[in-house]
Image (tube, rainbow, N blue to C red; front, top):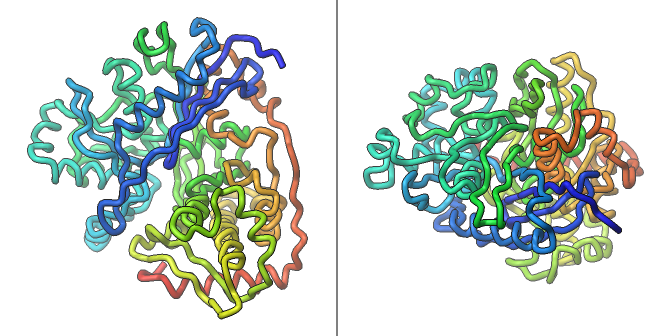
Length: 501
């Protein structure tokens, strides 16, 4: 197959790996490369990455996919990234002052609990659309400023820079010339006012974060500077950024109110477009920015599950019951019915709609005749049940907003290459599951945003025409059995809870 320029380089920096994909002008992937990154666990509930490793692996992936391409044929770079992961670095040297604190990290749970007890959560939710949870960046950067010697004083003098992974990569790619983020990543910090899409002074005061440490907030399809020439042989403009879940929704062409997608990577994230008005959730989901591009602003309601594909990784690395993630489908197919067995993978707490940072994982209902196959299936089922948790809460919020409940679920991410999982997801949620031909929609969304800004794609309609269905998985399980299994799941979750909903 022949691919013609202009090309778009999409950077997809995730929780477990850095990846680069080179797309052609028809949004077809022509080359990709990924490198796993180390997971660092300094204490119970703490999760870190080496920020310099994030940069070096990203750079290596970009160079790998561009090795046979003339850099002058690359029209733009788009970036998508693990959100909420927090990095603090020296503006002058570009050196990180501490490991990146990953979105899964729970070290600020006590701080969030204290803020809730002081009655701040309603004001926080009203301003930011978020809840007080260690998931978000705000309390992470506050922790860094409080625990690094001289950190707060240096930040107030403007000597330090805070950013999520997108900002860190832009800073490194531009040789320190640009310190910026986009509205989607900024909306996950607890520091952005969701209605104005600008940094909120009240939130900065509440979390003791100096304005001088913050990046500029820009449109998703916008100007983020150019790479320094010696990285790729010439300067390449950076023209698109979105957090991974918003990028996936963009790649799935979720441009209309009511469009829903769910991404299955390390975690699972369901997001529904709610249109141009900032929403609010009455069901402990999150209101967030969906995108701002070509003069159009869209918002979304999102549900976040912390552990999805990570449970498969755990079965591989910690238990050794599989040698590769691809083996889990065959193993799960051999499982006996094993009704009553549930795996609640609350390794770093429970996300939406529970928001219980102190919950921990459990396998409930084990009997002597169960083994690796039954545990593997229960692990995959846990992702399906958690998705139903989100969809039920989301449907209630959508009805409150005058929108229809989801009729089908667009899915993407590494887990959906597994046909058995997709069918199980349809059976346990009761919704048809639509898998697109391109399942790496996170990188695709970043490419679309960069391409919009660079003129490779004309408009949203131009992008929507490119979405293509690979396969629809229709529910086959009887509703009575589906509901009975879900009832067992809710009972299993209640056994690991430490906080009331």
